Image 1 (spheres, helix red, strand yellow):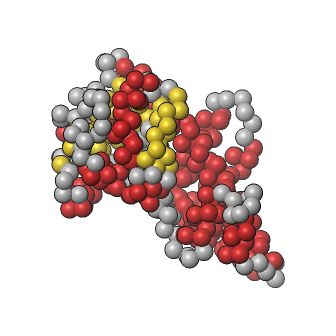
Image 2 (tube, helix red, strand yellow):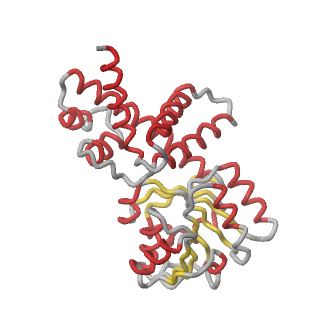
Image 3 (cartoon, rainbow, N blue to C red):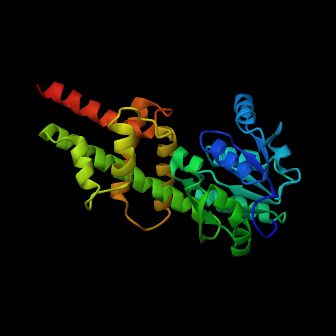
Length: 299
C-alpha cells in the first residue's frame, strides 16, 4: 500500500454484516474508495442504500480490482478460505474476521508462495465500537506491511501490532474467552445477590468502583441485561465459536485450562438452549431461568 493517510486509497471489503457494515462505512467516510461485497444480495442492497459513497460489486473477486488491499469481515475460517480462493488478484488480504490462528498461519504461508500477503486484524468492541471507530484492532503480520496499513486500520479503531501473522487471531480468541468467563462469573454473582435480596443496579454500581469490575459489569449488565433488551449485537453462536478456538489453541500448548473448559461447557449448554442467533448477553437470562427451574424442582 502507499504511504500517508487513508484518503484516496482503494480497498476491497468483503462481509457486510453487523460489524462489516459500520466498519466499511467509516472507511468511505474517511475518503477511501471502497469496493464492497457480501454473498447476500439483501446485505449488498442495504449497504448501497445506507452508504451511497461506496461501490458495491457483484462478486468477491471484483473487490480486488484496483484495490491495494482486500479486507475480510467474515464468520469463520471456512468462509475466509473460500473467499480467499476467489481473490487471485489481491496482493494483500486483511482478515478482520475471528478466524483460527493456526489456519491463518497456514493460509498466509500458502499465499506467500505466490508473493501475496495475508495479515490478520480481528477486532473487539462490538457494533457500537464499529460505529464509533473505537474498536480494539489486534494486528498480526510483517512489521512493514502493518505499519503501512495502520492509517487505514486507525479509521476503524485502535490498531496494535501484536506479533507475526496469526497472533491477532490468537489474541482475539483469548480475549473472548476471558470475556465469556467474566460474563458468566458476573451473571452468577448478580443472581446470587438477587436471591439474597440485593438490588442488582446497586450491586453493579458498587462493583464498578471496586476490584470485581469487568466489561460485563460496566457495559453488558447495565446496558443490555438489566433493561432486558439483550442487544449487544454479538451472537451467542459466534461467542461459542471463538471460545472453542481459544480452547483448541490452549490444547496446542502445555498450559492446563480447567477453568476455560468449564466456561466453554456452560456456554455450549446455553447455545443448545437458546440457539446461535440469540445475543450472547442472553446467557444471563438463561442462567436466571435455570435458577428458577431449580427452585421449582426443590419446592
